[in-house]
Length: 231
Image 1 (cartoon, rainbow, N blue to C red):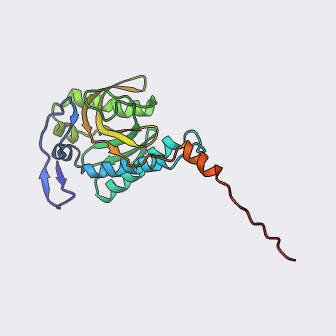
Image 2: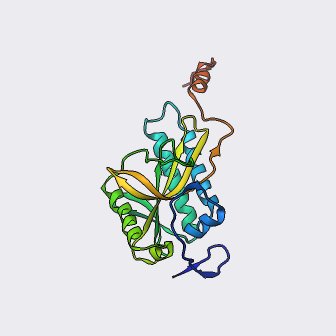
Image 3: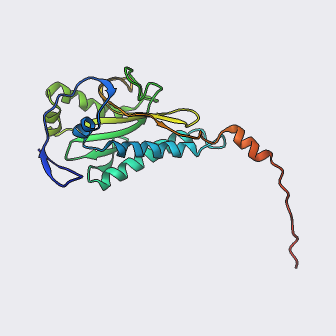
């Protein structure tokens, strides 16, 4: 199985590597070697989600902040990876995926809890997932049981599914995120991870528009001049 380097046009054999259990920040090279994605691609996508969520306020529908953040991340990540010839958008089993046919890898985007992006934790999905998610992620376990190396699993005709897990705090001042490989699933919830690539958090210099800002804007006195239309 050969992989075409997306940045210098050369080809190289995929190196065999063990998929280890770990919860630590990974190096740029390790992440690139494993998923063949530059870390900045992921950072830019999560930044898009953070900005989309920060534009919402107390007048937004209840589900708007979460949905628009998720949607922006999915759209940005799909666009970048399609542009880089890494993979293509795909809707399968009720999931919006980014799929790399060459590497046999799926990426699905999901919000997580407060442990997301933190070392030495076991983050959980923000919401329990349905049967489609289970059937897709369950294939990971078959790959882990059958193959000992990451390279061997990728050569198999079944995709390995990774999750871009993100957490944005309430005032949208921070986003924590990781791309991780689930190893166990129970009642629609991930209960264990095989591998976690943890990114440095994104910190916004200015918090999002808040309730006090809204009240201040609407309390200002405005002089209205009404002109009668002749005729």
